[in-house]
Image (tube, rainbow, N blue to C red):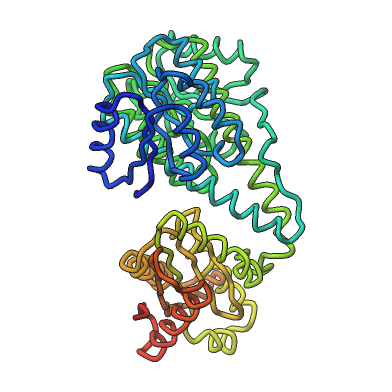
Length: 456
């Protein structure tokens, strides 16, 4: 997962060590040696994440963090504070200033890299929703103002903990915060309640006697209904490797024992604010676009939306020096499906194609119905080689299992796909990218269908 990371520290040796670790994992590193330079580079460079030292002259890390979080152009950049300070009060102060995490020196490399990957993944999802909201604003539709604060009261927490003492401690903390809560004793029960209930946050212990907290992370992230539900892990100080695995599986944050009330409250409220901000973005966006820009049959976006949104997505990838790819998708012999089985069966096939394609893509990818039986998938930050692999995955997802139309009718369906990609430093336009994908699709159909061709 490539990204640009701003490292801020007044000690050149610390900067050099951190930059070396990040570069080894193929991150692009930007540096700043004081708070003023950090504020300037955060605005001009728009990094994907900031690693911020606390103890700096003139402007300390707490103040830098507060200023970044109060600026609409930088407030959504994740910040990890890195410092020699180890008191709980310092961690809470950093979290309340807006930091996403607070790591104490000497830094555990496993924990740092897992945290970086986790925050980058979450940021890209949120960036995509903000980009879609900006697209909706071009159609004179209501948008959420960036300055609007998310509420962090009245939350409902589901937690998995089988130690009675720890369970009582968590309950006491949640009661003091005015939260409702539901303790569960197994991963099966937790998954069931998360799917059926209206919870704002899931907490899971990694020190369970007969259950696996990491398995809960994987199961929640694999289910559509719980894919975006925040997960906060609770672990012992010597379980940092398990925490890192949990973050890679999709957990949002973690607490280390012994639990302390103020840090527990700060991290819980942070997750609740982020969830409600995400929910509000998604709700406003979906409502405002449902009629104007979504195909009513399949639920995919329509061509009108693509014409606006692709230009924004293209510009963002170019400014971040990232590639972008497009897949053009055509259902093979779709007219025969309508002629033989009728238009209701054809409509069911169209809807299921969109469903299977969407489930095979990332949240930040865009699925569009171009018209009739033709669709497109826009893949930001994906180069040509990966686009070809994605196309083959989609082709297999369609062809592997016949489409069940009724109890007595299952229709085999295949698709042809044309793929095209642009590198960030080229001079091509979004329109040229679409033309190339269309030409590749034509070659796929001419070459026998049920195949993927790449434009060259």
